[in-house]
Image (cartoon, rainbow, N blue to C red; front, side, top):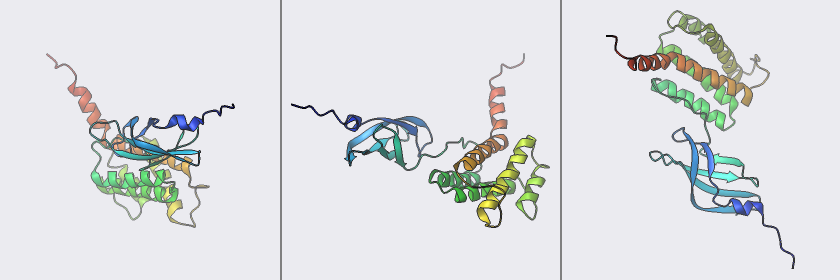
Length: 209
């Protein structure tokens, strides 16, 4: 009697996964919900739940034969700290991150540019175009020159996304957007979070006698 080797995918039924929660932004090992389904002996489709007791966000997943996470819905977004950032800026930047997670890179670049517009408006920077407003922003906030240079690069990336005739960047794809989002996060930290973090640190110091 010939014994057929067990299909490796069958042993992954009910496998836990580790990912970033699209609902609360935290990373964790997600709990299994219900029974997984096998599709064509190639995929596992199932449901998972965020382990955070407050969030408990719901996730649909597809795993491949080796257990790799192929797809999740809602999509996995790049997490960032939202503390002290104005709501309008958070909303715009979250749209940029959501577009990125769906491989809509042109839309993501446009929304990153819109995030810069929101920052300039919130800080009272004026000018006829974004380039001029970024220049005026230098007179209103203290930032490393590298971040101002990055803002100008993000502006150019957004121009390429919005206008067919613009061609500063060779393409607008995941690598360009990964760097753009990383720079935008650092910009938001510098503008809205470093001073708060410093205040917390100073609040931990012992009082001077």
